[in-house]
Length: 120
Image (cartoon, rainbow, N blue to C red; front, side):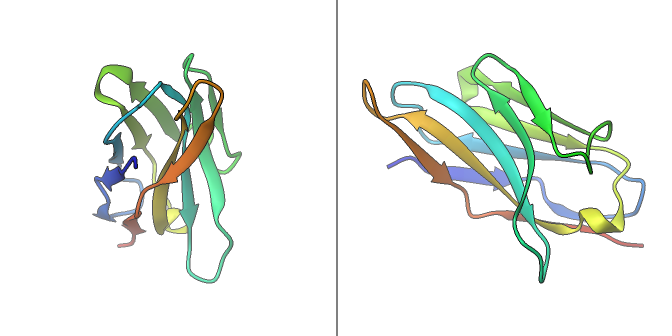
């Protein structure tokens, strides 16, 4: 069983920055892709950013130009650099990893989430 652990959340003022980390305990046969999601109170979970094994990145329109996703494959770790934060970015941020668990099998694992609060 692979465990994902997020860190780096907290309270930040509008316009500030935070960097989130997500580390997988094992990559088994390799990580296919990783992603960040967020869920604000009373709202549906939203896909924020994805990064593939080859490093291709995709972002939600709401965070383009402000957030950057990256990976350190050697550390099984994904990062989310968040700049110019807005109150509407307040949410629980969770990561997932799509991992090769067999020669022809992939499974998706989730972290517990980390709270990001943007407020003055």
